[in-house]
Each structure stands twice: as C-alpha cells, then as structure tokens.
Length: 88
Length: 403
Length: 117
Image (cartoon, each protein chain N blue to C red):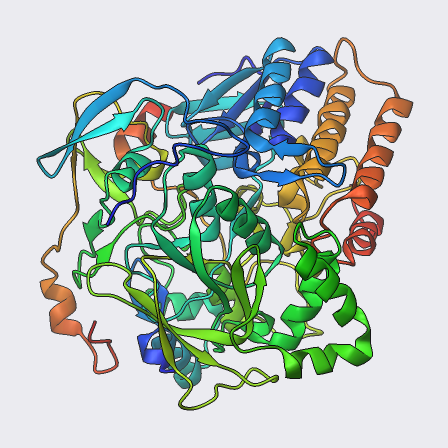
C-alpha cells in the first residue's frame, strides 16, 4: 500500500507520505507537522483528521497523556464575519 | 447578547435532553442548543431489539425526551453551531454561536462523540461515507445510501449499524477490515478485532454469530478459529463478515464503483495475488467513535487520555463537574457508552447544576447520589459494553485530584 | 442506478407523508420531502457529487453527515460554504456545487514531494 495515495487531510489533500516525510525530516511535533504540511488547516479545521494526526504524532506509552497533541483553537466551526459581527 | 438563561446546554442528544428536563424541573431557566436540524443527537439513528424483544427506536425515544424537556420548560434551538466558549471576569460563560451570543453562569457540554476514520486510497470519492452518516440517511431521512455497499471496519458501532441497514433492506456485499497502515492500529489486526467482536457477540441478533461466537470464545479455540476462518467470511444477517480480508483501495472515477480487497494472514499481512474486485456503489467507513470535546478544550478544561473511554476526556467528577467553575460535561463527551448511560449521566448533570445554582426546587444530596448510582446500574445492564474496562477507567477519573 | 427512498420499513413503518418541495441544484430541478436536508434530498435524487476539490478538482460528496467534515459544502441562495447535511431544504431553494479555483501561488511553490492527484 502506497502511503502516497492515502489522503489523511481531506480538505488540503495532504497524504500520509507527506506527513511521514515531514515528521521524519524535521522530527516535528503535531503542531509543526500541521504547519509544514497544512494537514488540519483546511476549512473543517481538522475536524476529520485531527484524531489521525494525533495518532501519528502521539507520544509513546508511559508519556504523560493529558492535553491534545494538537491544540484546539476557536472558532470550532467555520463562521462568517457577518455571523461573528452579529454575535457581539 | 442574551443573558436570561441559568444554564445553556450544548448538544440536544440523550444526555443534553435529560439534563435539560432535570434542571428545568428543579426551576432553572434552561436553553438547549444543537447543530443538527432535529433534536435527538446520535439517538435518532438508533434502532435495535432489546433482549426482551422490544424495539429501541431512537427516533421515538428522542421524541419522548424532547417532549419531557419542553414540558419541563426548557427552550430549544436547533441549527445552531456553537463556535467558541469563554469564561469572562464576571464569573460567567460567554457562548458564541452562528446565531448570536449568550452569557450564562452554567454550561453543560453534551456534545457526544464523533467518528474516527481509517483512511485508505479512494476514500474521498463521492459514495464513501462514515457509517454514522449512512445510519442517519437510512433511519432518519429514509434515503438509500446506494444499491450495494461495502463496510470497512469491524467494531461495535459498525455491527449495530449493519443490522439496521439490513433491516431497511440495504444490500451489503461484505464487511472487511481496513488496510494496515500507520493509522489503522488494532482495527486491521484480525486477532484484536475478533476479540473485540466476541465481547458483544452473545447479544448479537443473529443466532449463527451468537453460537459461533460462543464456540470461538474458548481461548484455545480462538487462534484455531482465526486459522480456520473462511476467506469468504461468516455470514451475519446475510452479510459476509470477512475477518481475513481487508480493503486495499476504493475504486471509481467520479464516484464509488467498487472496492479492491485482498486476503490477509492471521497476523494481518497481505497475501500477494489474492486481490479481487468487489462491486459496490457506496462504502461505509467504520472507524469507531471518540468523545467530541473541542469546546471543553477551547474553554481551557484539562484532559486525560483514556483509551478505554475512547480518547481524550475532559477531567470531571462523578457529579459531572469539570475543574472549571460552572462547566459541566455529560454523555459521550465523558467516554463512549450507550445512550442509556448518557441519559443517566444527563440526569446527574442536570441535578448537580440545579443544586450548585441553588435552584428553587434544588435536589437533595440523596437525590444526586441516587442519580449517580443509577449511572452505574445502567452501565452494568448495558446491552453493549463498548469496552470491558469502562467502569475501572471511570473510577480512576473520579478518584483523581479534582474540583 | 436508482437511489431514492426507503418506502417500507419493518419497524419504522411506511415512509410518513410529507409535503413535496422543489429546489434546483446547478440549474436542474429536484423534489425534496419537507424535513429533508439538502444532502438527503440530493442523495435521494441520485446526486452524489456535491463539489469538486478547489485545488485538484477531485469530486466530493457527503462524508460525515453531521456537519464536521465540510465536504458537502455548497452555495445556497448566494451564500457560499453552507453545509448541505445541516441545512433544511426550503421550497424554491437554489443550490450550486463548488468547483476548482485558481491556485497560482500553490502551483508556483509546489515542492517535489507534493502529490499528483
């Protein structure tokens, strides 16, 4: 199975191979993987691939497993400026 | 800015609805918000036969809970997406939504669970849906997802939905494992999958699987069972459950045309040359559920990772309170379990909040204690145990530092 | 291929009566049942591709059906990026699919490792 043909982030069409490559080359954290590959930066805000990215960058057993590897940022749903404006 | 409510509940599923009626009955002014067009949450799609033979019809159960909440005086808004949650200096929470902004002293997050995926080549094609999506299409919208489907992934949720699809007369060509890759973990390991299936096989609606499972349950036979497991699968509800086959790729030009599958060894290794094409016009990706806790995260709630409960869980006590003042959680956000457990937890949350808010008809300490006992009883009686160690994990969570 | 409705259900009973609504998708007229989401009405009408990926043009349809994945986003009555799975069909609604957008910057900066999708 070619990792190059497995899309992990559907919004930005980032493949498993690209994510592995970023992690391998730069030994990067979940956050940096996201910044380098754009995985999780699409319109859904990582709603679909966050658990997958977490799995790829999850610390090994025994490490402290408290916070999300990838920080959750508001807004947790896309919202238009018009709607945002109405809110406040 | 709307600030008339004592309690705002995010998520009108079984936990949120029950919390709303409990809190409203105690005298609180309650607002329920839900993103979907109908209240009921994941309950809406559920349809299964109870051990006594009665049907658990999620649509009806949801209607009853909605009626109860409305009669108790709770307000309800559907089609509202909550986008952010923030604690302000005045000891209140601000809730931002796509339809206005609210301020309230108490917030209950009852956002339930979301589905995880097991990605494979071709999974972005139209016609590939999460199995929960197909469930809602089938039972709620009464729309056929297609003429012939393939289910990729075997877990409790998948099996429950497969039986619902069969009930609705939807043809399924096969249930296969996801391909092994860096993301699939135990979901592509025949041995681990068999073990997890056996946990609830005694309750399986199908006699074949039921008796077959009892036979396999003996650990000595377990390995033998895997070796002898027929490549074409064992039929469950007329669908071949192919534990020794995995999907390699979903094929199609503009939409799903079929799935390329291959045989695998007992260890889950692909057997070269065994590839075959299964015709299908839709595919269900069944990756299981994880607690949907993004709002707890943006609110600043601490988390614990508990694999038995489905992932990252907001820290909370047995009365459903998080360490953040005024913030509560209930239902699948606290761990993936059945709707009945969510209902029982919703009641605990509603009552605890009413007590903490010193509501007019605030419940007694004993009443809250009793509601917490009810959660445990419900868990013990649950038809489907999502994970054998749920009770232990819960106890661990409730004993930790806290509030 | 026929999709359509589950007319008879052994437990849920016959399909309840519902008012018929008409709407258009990319200029073609469809009928929905009152209470349908845009996604369910289109699927019942045999439409599976709701948009093309903005950059690579790969076809996309419903995936999660609960408003998380954004794959089903369409333009409804002039408002873009509306989730078809969470939007109730209203009579005379005009819905447009999404299509490929120019991405000159991405083309220029594309690295060798990028997928050829």
